[in-house]
Length: 137
Image (tube, rainbow, N blue to C red):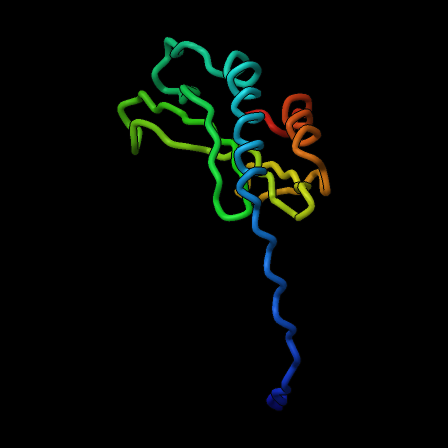
């Protein structure tokens, strides 16, 4: 069987992601904190179940990582076979795309981020997180 010839291929450099302005970071954190405290926590943070085999949500939080803003749920694992007493699972991601707009994605059960919306304002992203069934922790 003949070997393939190797050829050189031009690969253009990747474009740098835009940096999030500090004022926008503060605005996003404040609006998201209000959504978490008033809507998400009352809906999803419940008292511990009687059956200790199942994980349950104890908190919902947010954090920045580079140009991404994540919403995550903290789960408690009370069972005797638990690997750790608690863990975090991200369920929504806002990616800054520039000009005060974001792309909105959810975490699929396979561990892959699926982008549902693109080029949305902060308020529209938070409304989608509140209303869409994709973003249930």
